[in-house]
Length: 207
Image (cartoon, rainbow, N blue to C red):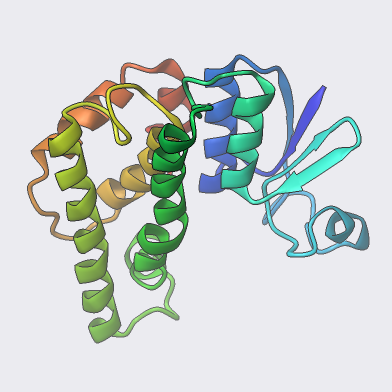
């Protein structure tokens, strides 16, 4: 059976669990990370030299990097609706996935530990303000995209772009600071809430 190594409180583990359920794949999840089995062991570093979760083990195939894992799982399950085969449609989905992993997630690198995790090491007001500005800027890019599509991130159908960005937007919504009005995102978020796997692994009270 497919094994997923990583604690369920991890945002990146949760996107993999959500993808598995959308794709109809059976899996065994095993808790690794802070508070659980250590990732700082020689055995784990052989699986992922970065000592980070998630990692999947599929028979003798090992893969790390959450968005790469989501792509692999969609292809393994033959779910062309989640990740299209046609090159341009696939590139459109992957474009938004890559943007999530780079621009969107990097925007909250300081402000989320400060306001979401209450980490006392992140206490610079100027950096917090700059982080909020950049995070909201990215959210407005997504807002305009959803205004254009009128439905899902990459177009008329639900894809992996919605999975990875759904988790990120949930984190943005739950972090306490002033948020701009985003009616298209709110409507999209309500559509996500109709999906049982999102309620289990996305909008489940976890940051």
